[in-house]
Image 1 (cartoon, rainbow, N blue to C red):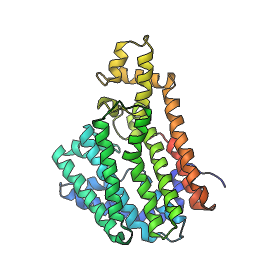
Image 2: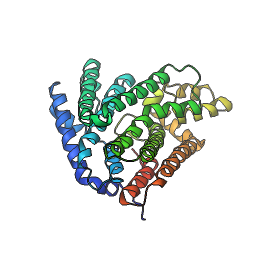
Image 3: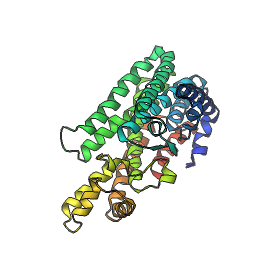
Length: 328
């Protein structure tokens, strides 16, 4: 079966339902930000790729041609994700998100925290409509893992090495992707083995997505990323490419202390940013990081082997490839 690699092609299976999700999100977010005096800001936030709603709907297509009942579920998953982004931007002091000023830059940190709280409430309310499968409870347990991962990254109990970095990535990103893929299968009455396979698929998908995102933060450009690059290194976050680069700096005396200081986020200016991006490529750190992301994509695809061939399965496989081929 032919693999597709553009989001328009990948989303074709659920294009109609995704339009309904977008309308639901626009209405909900507009109402949330009307409280801050700018309902249009909520609509502007919908510049993202909608990967989580698409994952939810396409996963459902594995079991039913009619996934109209999943529109609310898909919208809820995206609202929860948006809420985590709003809170992340406060923690990271980020001033750009999706090509526009972040909520904390547009208003202030207090308003941002409260706006994030309001958005996550809307998501949980939508999930409460799927109470027969315990959707809200599952999402709350997932959010607990997400927050645990963030706190453990801020206050690690040991040095963050490659293994711990992957573990934290599973918690922070993989867990939410797993829930996004698991919930539609549960709602549509899939067998336990199918639910478990999709959850595992989502977790590996999420890990690959986040690893690639962390690399793009270091080597990407603001105009394509839609957010300020180098935010991780400025905030002292130990992401996978930074861990790999630290190993090289520590073992190569020729690099010198100035570059070590740059990696510590002490003076990441334009020239330093270019030097850092070049070094990540030239040292092999970028390739090593993408190899790890590719390994998790392979694991994610393996989880789909239990499902028969279908346009939905093909879309999930293609979306997995997109994760590591993207530029933003």
